[in-house]
Image (cartoon, rainbow, N blue to C red; front, side, top):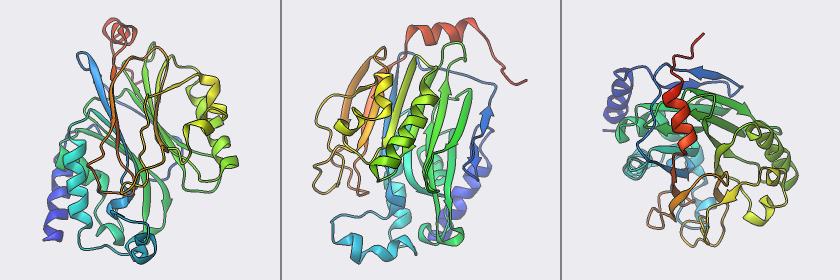
Length: 299
């Protein structure tokens, strides 16, 4: 049954039109595509650390379920398919702790499987730690829109942390979304936030989302604060999923971006993190630049 599911996902992936990207080494890369579209009004965003489909549900399972980080548990593929039912309701999804195909994921590229099950035409995988058959530790994103460029950035520090920069619209006035997964230690995390800050400094309309492994008060004192990004409002506790009391998954935005309907999906207990969702209005300047200046951008 599991082999049949994996084979079906792979065949669905092969049949897809061009419009996806796979970054195997985690270095900085840029992918350019010809077709660019924007939604009519707004963009629904979701950030979710999916814990490679392991589905930890209580603290003691970090110990008793540690074997799931090495070999697949019986419901690993089923958990990913349940996650697909959650993410299908969004336009752009930033994912952390995705497995690109190893023993613990039953050799299924979880990002490909999610894209296939939830019918996303564009996906991108950033492989940050390659342990061969023992783990393909990745960030990723799914999109119903075609970005004009995608960049992989390896973050400073020990291998395993990365940022993806996704650019929608047109280079003259783009909407830039960054997906990040940051270090646990404050010193290295601040170094990484400084790197992300330099990446985003040239852009007016930006969103940063992901697992920051820190609370908002730490971000306010970090190098990212110089961008004056605005956190989504409310006590949005995302960790641990079974008794959330920490806001460590964040969606930050430029002050010029209008935000609607931010919430934590509290009924989604498929990881040790809860998903964080929001909706942003597409700025008029971004839409105008897209309409006025036509692609292709490929040189």
